[in-house]
Length: 271
Image (cartoon, rainbow, N blue to C red; front, side):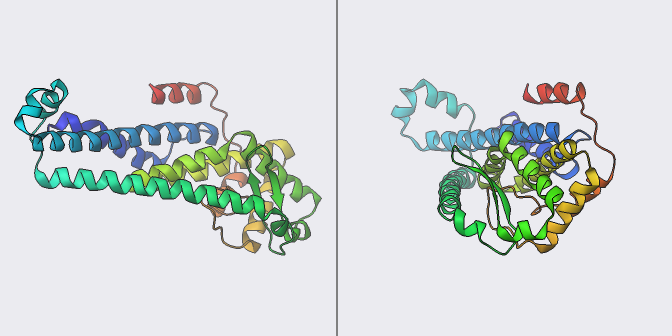
């Protein structure tokens, strides 16, 4: 097994960790998109590398006659040898990744089903709850406690924020980030940064719609202080993540739209 075989996975993993730790000085719209592409490329590189190592190790264990009769097997052997411990680890990692991915999708489906089945009970809660429920029969779901906590202008912020999540399909980004971590656990750093970018994206949409950044910041802080802890892995609610950073960003000047740098960096990242 040669260094060039492992290089793409190692380089992209390092890039994802750096981006999750430091981020880019861009509007959250572009940050979220670039991180999603980088995370996806990293997962593809890591998983394909693990599959390749496992395939080379498996080919080495085949009978000589089976290897000689297969061009692909001879190609795999040309990249060997793979130490037995590395081959076994790669097979174990593949199995663990498959199990985690299946459990993640089952969990997402169950959470979506519970929210839709218990929508009326959620509306009647005295706790302040607001969430964007995707799908044809989805929408913005708010609890009775939230309507009592906020005034009319603050409720408008809530709806603008949640509608931004729905309009831009942020639940897909969130589910994708969860898949990144299920397949490559070190990408939890990138997942946290991506979720923050999604919330900042919706915050900026709400601020642009209401024309009052301070109002959006005050609403987020007020809901965060009164809301219970989030339990969902897919839902992006108003004030359940990175509240302090979001409030600080809203109390500062609006970020640049990055109409040139954003698309250029997004295209370059994709390439």
